[in-house]
Image (cartoon, rainbow, N blue to C red):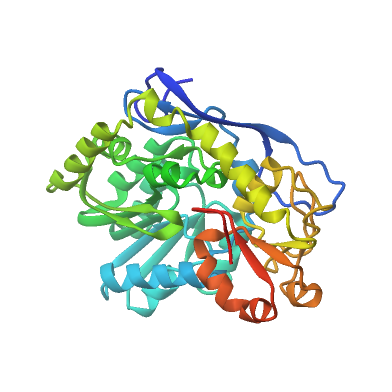
Amino acid sequence: MNCRICGGNSLGEVIDLGPMPLVNNLLRHPDEPAPQRPLKAVFCRDCSLVQLTESTPPDLLFRDYRYFSGQSQTMVAEAQRLVDRFVHPGQRVIEIASNDGYLLRQAMARGASVLGIDPAENVAACAQADGIPTRCAYFNPDTARQLRQDAGEADVMFANNVLAHVPDPHDIAEGIRIILAPQGVAHIEVPYIVRLLQSCAFDTIYHEHYSYYSVSALRRLFNEHDLRIVGVQEIPLHGGSLHLQVAHGGDQTQADGMCADERQQGLFDDAYYADFSARVRRRADALLAAIDPFDTVGGYGAAAKAVVILNFLKLGPDRIPWVVDVSPHKQGRYIPGTRQPIVEPDRLLQEMPDACVLFPWNISDEIRRRNRLYTDRGGRFIIPMPEVTVL
């Protein structure tokens, strides 16, 4: 294979998680087939991009999507922060992978003209029904040209946690170049590969995430499309992410400095990734050891992270019999691979398991606030990342 950004073929192994089901293809019936696909990540020695060796066709992943951003208070609050900071009345705002309109709804309330683009038919339909103008499509250069013709250029663009989800990131970068107004700014958030490796967050590696980004890889990508990274901030979202501000021109000194730091850290070298697999195995063993003392254990949050952890650790219904989730779009379905039923949150208090593995650890504060009664009654939450913790 060749690198998704630079086209190079000098690739080193990061980790091989083995066969894994598609994490958001939740089963309608416990006996429904759940095909597994190889899940192996490598890094490019030329541009430092970490990427999967296999490209799953996007339509298998995104056409019927079960993740709705608006059901997370954490994600809604992050969207409000972005809108308050970067959107002004009268601006034209376009969001790539707009999901259920959780961000654009707030931009509309601020007086902006908005348009969302999302390929998930069921999610886009929900946004449209809620009054959020949404085009159901993959964002690429052709889509960008059509949107520019139909609706004009964008003063502000958002692409939150979307670059990882596309097999060819050049489609996104070129689409932004085409539709972004001359003085416009695109705001892009991606999980930061440095923090993923540091925290050993193997549960964020799955087929939907084709790529895992450094500033160096992002600079290479956007510069190839005559775009400049005019601002970079590290933010705590998703265990450690990058917020980029991308424009047609401007000072890229800050990004250049971060790229120099990444090269000094070793992101282009095999040694930087050499012990990741061993650390993942130790993390898995530590999580199993944390679960072991408890007679009854539930699961909380049928997120992609849950599917990876349950399958990698081979935790079936005999050990974790169910996983609760607040989303009605997931309730009544089953975890692919390990086949636990996904049930309503009331189950947590009805059965009061000794402990509950909190899979979406990136929003653990939100979940713990929602379930204070469970812990007040003696229940314990087990947090898998960034360190295994029993609360």
